[in-house]
Length: 189
Image (cartoon, rainbow, N blue to C red; front, side, top):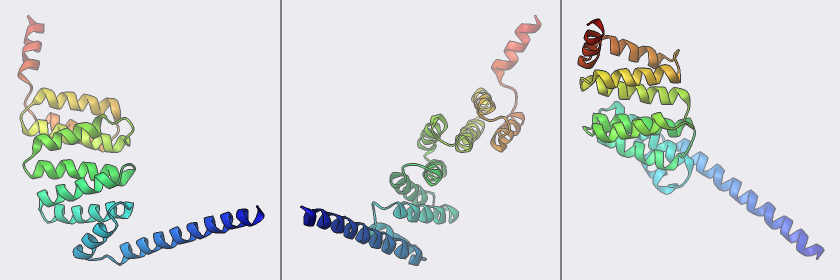
């Protein structure tokens, strides 16, 4: 019985040691991946590891900076699929949405932004940025009432956020909504 207990303890220790060695190998391989091809190979070889999500995020950022919106969206989507929570996951979701908008898929991007904005488990700053981008899309479409709705949403979420301030500036640059003018005229009579 004592021998079985000792073997169990030794076996558990050996498994933990090998797992730690494997994890260290993955970290070293990620650190060594400095080019886009190396990052792609690392991500493929370690597809379920969180560092593969970080590699996809780096590739997405590079594609976004290069103006390759479709490539960026694909890489952000892969990153978001691996990075399930935390600030990097939020960054991947926002990057996915903005890349989709730039790639001409504004409806898809707005849907993702809406999901991020309404996720109460998400960081307040991330939610505020998502709402601001929804506000910006509404402003580009000339939807003054939607812009006002988003500004109100931002005011409730975080009045001191820089995204709130930007949204208020955006709202101020738009002509008054026809419905708002009609309400004002009705109130004067």
